[in-house]
Length: 209
Image (cartoon, rainbow, N blue to C red; front, side, top):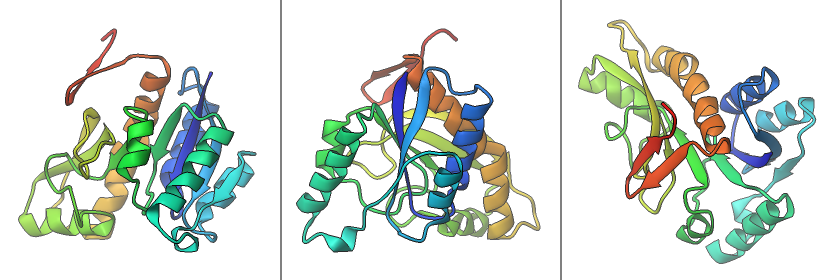
Protein backbone atom coordinates (compact mmCIF):
# COMPACT_ATOMS: atom_id res chain seq x y z
CA UNK A 1 0.00 0.00 0.00
CA UNK A 2 1.60 3.26 -1.14
CA UNK A 3 1.49 6.26 1.17
CA UNK A 4 0.16 9.51 -0.29
CA UNK A 5 0.69 13.09 0.90
CA UNK A 6 -1.74 15.71 -0.39
CA UNK A 7 -0.46 19.31 -0.35
CA UNK A 8 -3.14 21.99 -0.08
CA UNK A 9 -3.64 25.70 0.45
CA UNK A 10 -7.38 26.32 0.51
CA UNK A 11 -10.77 24.68 0.75
CA UNK A 12 -9.59 21.24 -0.24
CA UNK A 13 -12.27 20.28 -2.75
CA UNK A 14 -9.78 18.18 -4.71
CA UNK A 15 -8.60 16.61 -1.46
CA UNK A 16 -12.21 15.71 -0.72
CA UNK A 17 -12.55 14.13 -4.16
CA UNK A 18 -9.49 12.01 -3.42
CA UNK A 19 -10.77 10.98 0.01
CA UNK A 20 -14.21 10.14 -1.42
CA UNK A 21 -12.63 8.02 -4.15
CA UNK A 22 -10.51 6.26 -1.56
CA UNK A 23 -13.57 5.50 0.57
CA UNK A 24 -15.40 3.89 -2.34
CA UNK A 25 -12.39 1.81 -3.37
CA UNK A 26 -11.42 4.00 -6.29
CA UNK A 27 -7.79 4.29 -5.30
CA UNK A 28 -6.18 0.88 -5.56
CA UNK A 29 -3.04 0.14 -3.52
CA UNK A 30 -2.81 3.68 -2.14
CA UNK A 31 -3.92 5.63 0.91
CA UNK A 32 -3.74 9.28 1.96
CA UNK A 33 -1.62 9.27 5.10
CA UNK A 34 -0.81 12.98 5.43
CA UNK A 35 -2.19 16.37 4.41
CA UNK A 36 0.23 19.30 4.38
CA UNK A 37 -1.15 22.84 4.19
CA UNK A 38 0.60 26.10 3.37
CA UNK A 39 -2.03 27.97 5.41
CA UNK A 40 -3.00 27.37 9.02
CA UNK A 41 -6.66 28.24 8.42
CA UNK A 42 -7.17 26.20 5.25
CA UNK A 43 -10.47 24.33 5.40
CA UNK A 44 -8.68 21.39 3.81
CA UNK A 45 -7.20 20.69 7.24
CA UNK A 46 -10.72 20.26 8.63
CA UNK A 47 -11.49 17.82 5.81
CA UNK A 48 -8.38 15.87 6.75
CA UNK A 49 -9.39 15.85 10.41
CA UNK A 50 -12.87 14.58 9.57
CA UNK A 51 -11.27 11.77 7.56
CA UNK A 52 -8.90 10.94 10.43
CA UNK A 53 -5.87 11.87 8.33
CA UNK A 54 -2.97 13.66 10.05
CA UNK A 55 -2.68 17.33 9.06
CA UNK A 56 0.50 19.39 9.06
CA UNK A 57 1.02 23.13 8.54
CA UNK A 58 4.16 24.37 6.82
CA UNK A 59 4.30 28.15 6.37
CA UNK A 60 6.86 29.42 3.87
CA UNK A 61 7.24 32.75 5.67
CA UNK A 62 8.51 30.99 8.79
CA UNK A 63 11.69 29.98 6.96
CA UNK A 64 14.58 32.27 6.12
CA UNK A 65 15.13 30.87 2.65
CA UNK A 66 13.98 28.24 0.18
CA UNK A 67 16.58 25.71 1.33
CA UNK A 68 15.33 25.85 4.91
CA UNK A 69 11.75 25.40 3.75
CA UNK A 70 12.79 22.50 1.52
CA UNK A 71 14.53 20.84 4.45
CA UNK A 72 11.34 21.01 6.50
CA UNK A 73 9.13 19.75 3.68
CA UNK A 74 11.44 16.87 2.84
CA UNK A 75 11.68 15.96 6.53
CA UNK A 76 7.88 15.79 6.76
CA UNK A 77 7.62 13.62 3.66
CA UNK A 78 10.33 11.34 5.03
CA UNK A 79 8.68 11.12 8.45
CA UNK A 80 5.47 9.88 6.86
CA UNK A 81 7.43 7.66 4.41
CA UNK A 82 5.58 9.18 1.47
CA UNK A 83 5.60 7.41 -1.89
CA UNK A 84 3.48 9.91 -3.87
CA UNK A 85 3.03 13.66 -3.44
CA UNK A 86 -0.18 15.18 -4.81
CA UNK A 87 -0.46 18.93 -5.31
CA UNK A 88 -4.13 19.81 -4.92
CA UNK A 89 -4.36 23.58 -5.11
CA UNK A 90 -0.99 24.04 -3.41
CA UNK A 91 0.11 27.67 -3.80
CA UNK A 92 3.70 27.46 -2.52
CA UNK A 93 6.65 26.92 -4.86
CA UNK A 94 8.00 23.39 -5.06
CA UNK A 95 11.73 23.76 -5.70
CA UNK A 96 13.79 21.81 -8.20
CA UNK A 97 15.53 20.19 -5.26
CA UNK A 98 12.30 18.66 -3.98
CA UNK A 99 11.21 17.74 -7.50
CA UNK A 100 14.56 16.02 -8.03
CA UNK A 101 14.22 13.94 -4.90
CA UNK A 102 10.70 12.88 -5.86
CA UNK A 103 11.17 12.63 -9.62
CA UNK A 104 8.02 11.31 -11.27
CA UNK A 105 6.49 10.95 -7.81
CA UNK A 106 4.82 14.39 -7.62
CA UNK A 107 1.60 14.99 -9.54
CA UNK A 108 -0.45 18.13 -10.01
CA UNK A 109 -3.91 18.91 -11.33
CA UNK A 110 -4.26 22.00 -13.54
CA UNK A 111 -7.64 23.47 -14.58
CA UNK A 112 -7.06 23.60 -18.34
CA UNK A 113 -6.03 21.38 -21.21
CA UNK A 114 -2.25 21.77 -21.15
CA UNK A 115 -0.46 23.22 -23.14
CA UNK A 116 -3.25 25.83 -23.31
CA UNK A 117 -3.73 28.35 -20.50
CA UNK A 118 -0.89 27.14 -18.32
CA UNK A 119 2.49 28.21 -16.98
CA UNK A 120 3.48 31.19 -14.87
CA UNK A 121 0.51 33.27 -13.73
CA UNK A 122 -2.15 30.76 -14.74
CA UNK A 123 -3.82 29.54 -11.55
CA UNK A 124 -7.23 29.62 -9.92
CA UNK A 125 -9.83 31.84 -11.53
CA UNK A 126 -7.18 33.43 -13.76
CA UNK A 127 -7.19 30.31 -15.91
CA UNK A 128 -10.95 30.43 -16.49
CA UNK A 129 -10.93 34.18 -17.06
CA UNK A 130 -8.32 33.67 -19.77
CA UNK A 131 -10.34 30.86 -21.36
CA UNK A 132 -13.43 33.07 -21.56
CA UNK A 133 -11.49 36.10 -22.79
CA UNK A 134 -10.02 33.99 -25.60
CA UNK A 135 -13.44 32.70 -26.58
CA UNK A 136 -12.38 29.06 -26.30
CA UNK A 137 -15.17 26.57 -26.87
CA UNK A 138 -13.56 23.73 -24.94
CA UNK A 139 -11.45 23.67 -21.79
CA UNK A 140 -10.91 21.00 -19.14
CA UNK A 141 -8.34 19.70 -16.70
CA UNK A 142 -4.96 17.99 -16.82
CA UNK A 143 -3.16 15.77 -14.33
CA UNK A 144 0.59 15.75 -14.91
CA UNK A 145 3.85 14.87 -13.25
CA UNK A 146 5.71 17.86 -11.84
CA UNK A 147 9.12 18.79 -13.22
CA UNK A 148 11.28 21.92 -13.18
CA UNK A 149 9.04 23.67 -15.74
CA UNK A 150 5.79 25.20 -14.48
CA UNK A 151 2.96 22.97 -15.78
CA UNK A 152 5.50 21.38 -18.11
CA UNK A 153 5.76 17.84 -16.78
CA UNK A 154 4.56 14.67 -18.54
CA UNK A 155 0.78 14.52 -18.95
CA UNK A 156 -0.99 11.59 -17.28
CA UNK A 157 -4.69 12.24 -17.93
CA UNK A 158 -6.85 14.95 -19.46
CA UNK A 159 -10.58 15.51 -19.71
CA UNK A 160 -12.40 18.12 -21.79
CA UNK A 161 -15.28 20.29 -20.59
CA UNK A 162 -17.39 22.44 -22.87
CA UNK A 163 -17.51 26.22 -22.42
CA UNK A 164 -21.01 27.72 -22.40
CA UNK A 165 -21.72 31.11 -23.96
CA UNK A 166 -23.05 32.63 -20.74
CA UNK A 167 -20.39 31.18 -18.45
CA UNK A 168 -18.82 33.30 -15.74
CA UNK A 169 -15.32 32.39 -14.57
CA UNK A 170 -16.82 31.05 -11.35
CA UNK A 171 -19.36 28.88 -13.16
CA UNK A 172 -16.71 27.50 -15.49
CA UNK A 173 -14.33 26.84 -12.61
CA UNK A 174 -17.00 24.85 -10.78
CA UNK A 175 -17.92 22.79 -13.82
CA UNK A 176 -14.28 22.00 -14.64
CA UNK A 177 -13.79 20.83 -11.06
CA UNK A 178 -16.94 18.70 -10.95
CA UNK A 179 -16.70 17.20 -14.44
CA UNK A 180 -12.95 16.86 -14.84
CA UNK A 181 -10.63 17.52 -11.88
CA UNK A 182 -12.55 15.44 -9.35
CA UNK A 183 -12.66 12.54 -11.80
CA UNK A 184 -9.19 12.37 -13.32
CA UNK A 185 -7.14 13.26 -10.23
CA UNK A 186 -8.20 10.15 -8.25
CA UNK A 187 -7.89 8.08 -11.44
CA UNK A 188 -4.29 9.22 -11.96
CA UNK A 189 -3.44 8.54 -8.32
CA UNK A 190 -4.85 5.02 -8.57
CA UNK A 191 -2.94 4.34 -11.80
CA UNK A 192 0.29 5.47 -10.12
CA UNK A 193 -0.32 3.35 -7.05
CA UNK A 194 -0.95 0.30 -9.22
CA UNK A 195 2.32 0.83 -11.08
CA UNK A 196 0.51 1.44 -14.36
CA UNK A 197 2.28 4.66 -15.41
CA UNK A 198 5.37 4.32 -17.58
CA UNK A 199 7.23 7.62 -18.04
CA UNK A 200 9.53 7.94 -21.05
CA UNK A 201 10.90 11.43 -21.61
CA UNK A 202 7.92 13.77 -21.61
CA UNK A 203 5.36 11.10 -22.36
CA UNK A 204 3.34 8.84 -20.06
CA UNK A 205 2.11 5.46 -21.25
CA UNK A 206 -0.67 3.83 -19.28
CA UNK A 207 0.01 0.12 -18.93
CA UNK A 208 -2.79 -2.31 -19.56
CA UNK A 209 -5.21 -0.19 -21.57
